[in-house]
Length: 126
Image (cartoon, rainbow, N blue to C red; front, side, top):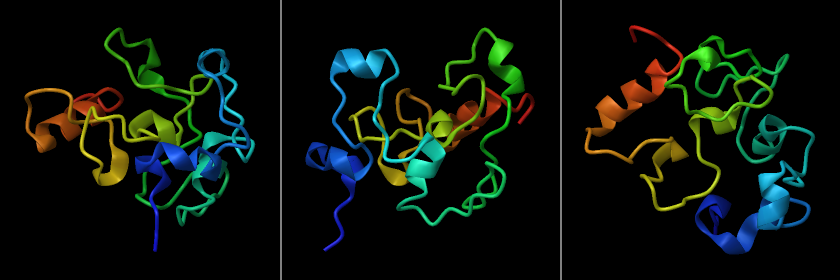
């Protein structure tokens, strides 16, 4: 029986050593089981970490986001760097589909159009 901790609030300790209060989370204290979000994701996801880049989908993490100066940029970064959390939601919050936990599903666009809009925040002309 495989339980997806992203879909059930009762499994917060799959990623956190302590469940952060709302105030702790807002101030950046997430009590992750590993030093970084990417290392924590790698505990369950078969991610090969090589110099802070993963090979699960071929998209690197741990690199500076050049588009962070773009006014329309809304994706979360870690000190200006791309992490798993930049494109993926960590928990199912009801704002989008659970497939790949991508940060899509919040507009009237098709899933392909939303995925493209997500990528365009960093990749101009994608």
